[in-house]
Image (cartoon, rainbow, N blue to C red; front, side, top):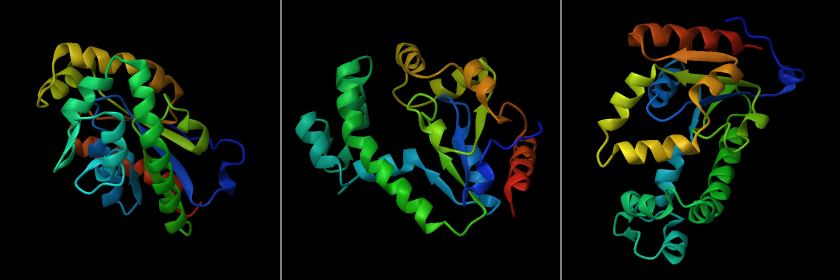
Length: 207
């Protein structure tokens, strides 16, 4: 795939590549490969885990809004998920607590790496929450639907109903692919996926 920079994208430093993909598509694997290539990666999911983990900055606020969903180990993701999944009002309340904190962490990350050629923002809901407007290019991680389902159903506590509910909240994979500057295929051998990562990295170094 030939990358054509968006208007004005060359002016930004660091150049920001948004990395996204639906559940079970292999985004974490792709992010790790970018890191191996020496590219700084901001992992939004990891930041959420930190904020909601033991002693996390958001634990008290989440407990206050969703009583009984936290404990000594921080937020119980199973309990919290049961409260918000499929409930638009409750999900919005949770996002109002979490998203501003993650946004602040992201700004600190960008400031810390402002001298780099480019960085990756690993954001699961890049399209769903409008984050695509703030990046210079988008890489979508994708795999065949049967592989996606196989991966997701291996997760503890996952059910077909839960997977269906999660998919309803996400932009379909076919739409994400159509809007991507790069598509990273993870249904192939990892060596092939890594080759794609190296190619993308080469497009943005020393811009």
